Length: 502
Image (cartoon, rainbow, N blue to C red; front, top):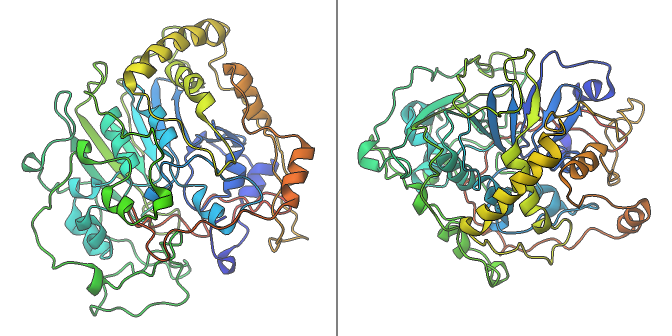
């Protein structure tokens, strides 16, 4: 888990993992930047981390009754976006920080969706979303966000790209530790509305800053505006940019002169998979490999017709914080023809189109090889013909055989938390083959890239972690600061001698 040792404490997740407690409601979640990523990595395609608690995987589309939900885990770091999923135990310190960075291959899969989604979920905010809500109130509450926002680096380019492509009526995110809502308007098959047609939204859902909880570890820099232009640094405060080796600048150095003018908002066509300013700061070794070309933009698919996306981010799950909101969502996606969506409780199920996309891209997934390259993007015309053929396979081999329902097949794979051992375990955790991933790969007829024999794992664990990546000293290329993430209250799973929330 990417979190300073002094802030690691055992929470209560191990009780859900072990079965001592059971979640009262079905809970779906995406991964962020302070998870026990080695555990979530076992469930790359999605799966149960405990009964009734379902991890959506690196990227996914699932159905819950009539709702169709798309998801993207991780945070944006431009220097890792085009890399393969090279992390595998034993981890280096760099691996621990990079394993949760969004990868282009997972985004590429989401961009192949050609039918309407009802809900989108990401950990990171879509880049530029702050300008489509009450940005004045946001910057008053979180003053250090303004510099990144005005520089166009706050949030995730990948999440914004997916949101503008899929255009769900609702998009939910977290990461920045505050409640914030916004409205994104689209027109026709073009992307989000240009600057001259956007106005700051005085949002009725945006509420003032909550009262300060004195028992909370401060991971948000300052929750209140500084009294001076150079606020004193709290040495006990967890750095929001823990992924980066660069210091946080004071608000006086980072924030331009405040204005009431809404800055230029880039359309999604202007957002590259890796922004040019990020790429310019990288060493030559990070230059795009031969054959890689930017994703070719094309008009929004005919079946995606929604024109308004309502964005909502909530605060941390702590006392006196705005972490809960109940919404009624009217689905607009086309329901599957072969299943009933009116039965209650609603059934969590796989999505036919997504399973087809998974089959198309399965052979492109390389796990644990830092020297490998992600296959070049062949374009949507190439992929769509293959996806159509694979949908027929899914219909015959999964749907007609009643295989779309996600089985409740959670199994304990690692020893549960042992209080006598505690959390001070220093050795690397063990890698496990998760039976859920095995079953999923068998269901859709793909290779399980996460399988390894015990002998192979033993041999790998004898080796030292790979050499740390070099990113040109302190100039890592932020791609957005990657703030937030719930330092010690994130859904971690202390895996040393058992799983438990940290």
